[in-house]
Length: 193
Ligand SMILES: [Fe+2]
Image (cartoon, rainbow, N blue to C red; front, side, top):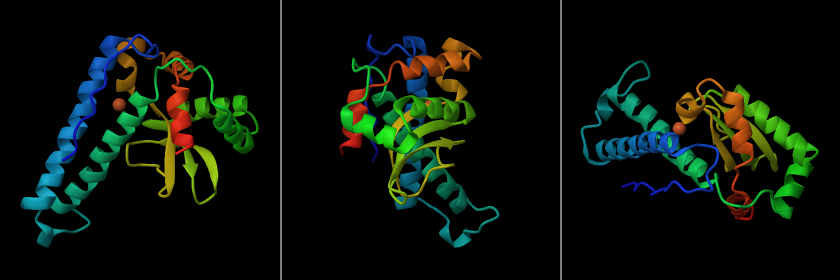
């Protein structure tokens, strides 16, 4: 059973207002509900495994829903955790890693913003363990575009539901305000994990 994380809107969250936060939180809770429904069917329901096939089957839909809903839960939690706070810049380790892999902090930032603008779902700074380096990756859905063996460091929700209530179609302003409201303490914890 996946328990939802209780996030609270606080004044240090400047990238989104309370109304945008509340609407987004309801959506997050929907993913928690759905992964629990799917898990319950997989564990003790009628999953119809004997009918499983690649064209259409209930079992296939369960498998599609399982990773979509679970990645939806995880990515939203990482996103809500990494906004706000009062640290305005990365710690030395994070800063050095970004400079090593992108040329400079500014170059990383420029690339992350471009990644966000290119993403229909999520922009993620992750540590790609196969290449032993950080990468900015673009996800068109919760479960579409991830590197299999990687760890997320910074997560930005680029679905329209993340900003449209507050910013309408001004996606650029949402991204700019996000970049100013990154919780670098949380990022440092993920880098040094
Ligand atoms: Fe979202």
